[in-house]
Every structure is written in structure tokens, then in C-alpha cells.
Length: 348
Image (tube, rainbow, N blue to C red; front, side):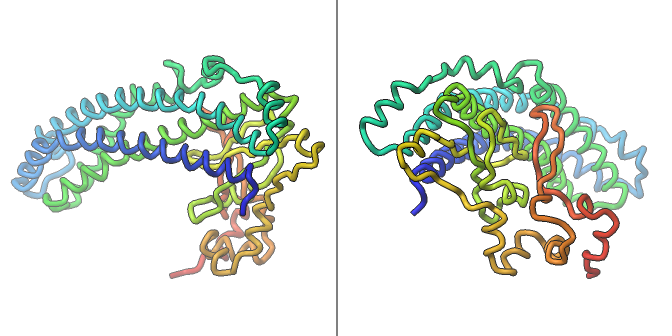
């Protein structure tokens, strides 16, 4: 059985991910309506292309149906972007009071006696959600995230779609493929907006958790990184799992990161209460079978690691994001080894 504190953190994370899925489903439905509205223009483009004889790029670019489709795609995705923007802000802000409550409940999971719990409740400084909102710069109206979503998503997706259609039609794409191709290109905007929404919601939850712990430094001295350690967990998060951080440090995982914080409570130790001590991710990874390790890493990365080309801790690479600042993601083999990486990639 997992430690009660880890069990509580995992339960709260499951709730967070369920809320994120609900939000994502709403965005998918809204985007689907935007795509469906383009049906007539797609049909018109198919008909025009069928009547073309060896068209060049200039001829294709001037097609009335293509220009009409591009304008409609931009307009519909612009409308979707306004809806998505509000969804993202609302869902991010909704996580703040939930995270503050979950953070206190995770700390409370250390203690069993009523007296200890009452003492904790009396000492715990519960921040007002409004004070945490000011920390989340990405929800401000002029933030880079919201500017990209509201002002750039529609024009960017529509222009890319039109350019790629011109390329593919000029190469002789069957008109029957146009509808599927438009759906794929429109999907680029959906994928980006879903990543944006998910990252904002998860990041908001973690930052609110951190703010609650910082406000109670006399109780919480730090936190440990808890990763999911499943088939979707990147190697950076595997490497970070179990690491100890100062209470003020940000859990700055990559976009879509599902990791959460486990609070360190000195008072529990003084009372003789067992502390959760997550086994480091590297140690857990070492205990996997070679087939499992290869599955997580991929053949080239695995072979280079087994050859001693890099340390497991080097799998975490920092990068700069204009919305969230410094974040951590999985290092690439080329990034680790440079030209030496070539010898580990097998020819098909």
C-alpha cells in the first residue's frame, strides 16, 4: 500500500486529470462545430479541383473556393479561439481553491490523531484564492498565451491550411483527399489549443499548491517530485521523480506535465510519524526489465545509455517558454551526444 500522503496526492491528481479531460472534451466539441461549418466550402473546392487540368500554383492560389475556405476557416477558428480563451482562463482559475484545499489535505494525511489534526488546522494559513490569481501571469488579458490564442490561432491555421492545400493540389492530390486533408490541417489548431488548455490548468493547480505551502513555511519545509511513472511519463519526469526541492521552488515540468508535489513536514518527523520517501526515479527505472527500459527510451537512447554515454540524470533538459519561463523536458540523444548519436541510430 502506498503511504497515506502519496495516496492522497495521487487521488487529488486523478481528480485534476478528470477535470482536465472534461474541459478538453468541451473544446473538442466546439472545434468540431467550427470544422463542420466549412463543409460547403470544402465541397466547392473539391469540385473546382476536379475540373482543373494540370494546374500550376498560381492558378490554384486564385481558386475562389480556396480563398473562401481560407476566410471561413480563419473566421470560425477565431470564434473558437475566443471561446477557448475563456474556457482556459476559467478552468485555470477554478483550480486555485481546489489546489489550496488539496494541499492542506495532503499535509493532513501525515497525521492520524485528532489532536494533531486540530493543531494543524489552527496553524494552517489558508490563502484566499484571489491572492494566488495575481501570481498567474498567463491568465492576464495581455499575456503571450492569450495573445497567441485569440489573435493568432485563426490566421495562422487558416494560412497554413491554404498553403499546404496549394502544395498538395499542385502535386496532384486526388480531390477525394481534400476533405480529409482539411480536417488534418484544422486539427493542428485543435492540438495546440488542447495542449495550451491542459498545461494552463495543470500549471495553475501546481502553482496554487506551491503558494499554499509557501504561506505555511513553518509547517512545510519543501516538497518532493511525484511523477506518474507510466507509459506516458517522459524520461525527464522519470529522472526528477523523488527529488527534493525547497518549498518555494516551482515544479516546472514540460507542457502537459502530470507531476505533482509531495510536501515535506518536519513536525511529522519530530512526532515520530513515518515520512514518505519516494524511491528515486532512476532507481525504479533500473529495476525494470531491459524490454521495459527499451520501450521507454527507444532503441537508440537505450543502447547509448547502456554503453555509458550519458547519466540518467542528464535526461532532464531545461528550455525557455515565453509563457511559463524555464521548464524541463526530455533531452534528445542528439542533444546529449551531438554527432556521436549517429552510431546508435540503426539503418532500416
